Amino acid sequence: MICVRVRVSGRVQGVGYRHFTTIHAKELEVVGWVRNLPGGGVEALLQGERPKVGELLNQMKTGPAQALVSGMDISEVECQEIDDFKVVY
Image (tube, rainbow, N blue to C red; front, side, top):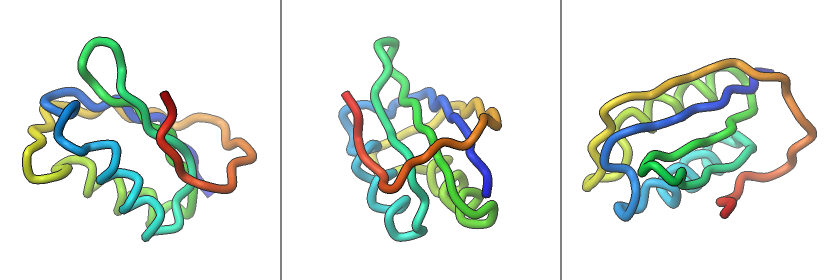
């Protein structure tokens, strides 16, 4: 089990990035959350089996068709008791 916090920069708001992340997280059985940041980026907490979290991170590097990811800051954090993936506001 691994837990990471990810900050994504680029054109990632208003393009369905949170929805994209949620769909792929649920498909991969990764739990956590995703939210918009005030500066225009997106932040996510991803928790699950290392290969599945890695696959989700790879998908997040591209995002949905209209997104343009310019950077990702990934840091490992302590895992929490989470049982679903959701968008937080």
